[in-house]
Image (cartoon, rainbow, N blue to C red; front, side, top):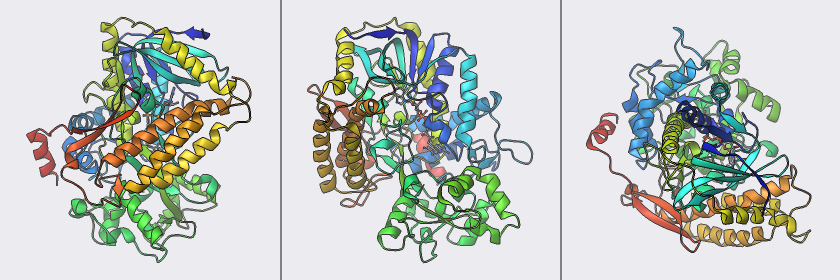
Length: 604
Ligand SMILES: Cc1cc2nc3c(=O)[nH]c(=O)nc-3n(C[C@H](O)[C@H](O)[C@H](O)COP(=O)(O)OP(=O)(O)OC[C@H]3O[C@@H](n4cnc5c(N)ncnc54)[C@H](O)[C@@H]3O)c2cc1C
């Protein structure tokens, strides 16, 4: 029998990013005992890294904005594969969620008349992103943490969930270990909210930190929940490409929102060469109009640098492949050119983009007020995740809820920038509320001792294997290389099939992995434990991508470059079969009600 401590709660929230904290705040306001657990320290979740802002149709900078425009933008951006109910709720509820954050103490940048300032971002028709310079996530997480702690939420930091426990089709809690001592912890819970963020560490070049190994996706899958849209991995067009040690670190879309332009090695603004039909009417056809848009001219259309991320990433890849890239394998992103238009451009850039200024100065010795940056695509965000009910956020397993990046539905085939932070607030709140109600109606479920014993045994196995056999880092690195090369921005059937063969070999190697040392702060051990999650999500991404025999949004297949009407009506859903095999199914995307279809038509 393994030794473990037991901490029972009504609601267990796994993840202390924006979604987890917002869920915990809501659940605790419904008078239930709530705990948040997180892999690293409180305040270090991805949400803190968010730069550009929170999308909400407040209409402070352009009064033409409203929930209907935001809804239509989100549906169009997601190539009409989003769960329409989630897109509707998100567009309607985001403004109040931002005002609520302000009431709890978040200090946003202001308009001249004192309202929350909003900035332009890709795919959003009007300036919509409430922001705090380019450090919006920091303000958001600080505010939520302060508020949450005063609500009496308990927190277990540096604590990683290994398995969700279930009984008779219902979630009953989770089994975890703490990083400091390697002790096991049991959290019996009446309801569980997954808010574990993304999967970026499945790829070699990524903006994501070490924590993002797809744990929530894998935990849900092994507990019997369905995953959806796993083929849609967002490659953000602008990550740093040089020096190699910082390759992949994000360069916010805010740079382009403030007037930054993309050029190839010939100095050409190549984004004007390829404007998709879907966006032609809304996009400037000359540089002057694009500039006027970024400066708030309501009669101007947005520059093509503010098209959706999937499209820009592919245009950049094309420029690089065709030999028009920058010296270090990217393209140029230039904000310094605005000195031709502004008397105090350098000061303006430092004020609007302070983090970007410091990031390039300190990491690449580039002064972005004077010279262009070199940028290229980086794995950034997971549109796919746990399939949830649009209103309640409950997964297909009773009592198991999911919110934020680890849930699927809102973003369809491509997420618009800024729509994640608002997603966290709207659906974190909903998940917390419905999880608390579920907990109030249900008692604790039965703890399955076999599940606990098996998880503990399996977790300790790497210590028992023959020392000197393969360690976890080599396997992790190999997987990242294979996913980058074979299931990346441009995909083909042959390469994806090869990826499945490689993943199968890596599963076998992971089964034999050994670690040195003891259970206290043992990074090698933690990496070995993360491996199975990374392999599960990598297999799910690859199988879903093979099943979608078309190109749409972030999923681009060189062997099937066109969109297909048939696939435009289905989501790819993945479940664990009774023999442990991964099952892939096509499911019809819920049909849009006529009034929302009409809204989309009106906003064209
Ligand atoms: C550099 C960068 C800039 C961005 N800028 C923007 C922006 O301007 N606007 C926007 O809308 N979006 C932006 N995004 C995306 C956005 O920040 C994320 O999608 C969002 O913060 C995810 O929030 P979350 O609450 O779902 O998860 P996260 O904030 O990622 O938190 C996940 C939590 O889960 C915990 N966790 C994970 N696995 C386990 C486990 N097994 N056990 C216990 N705990 C676990 C982690 O420790 C962490 O606390 C940006 C992302 C990055 C990386």
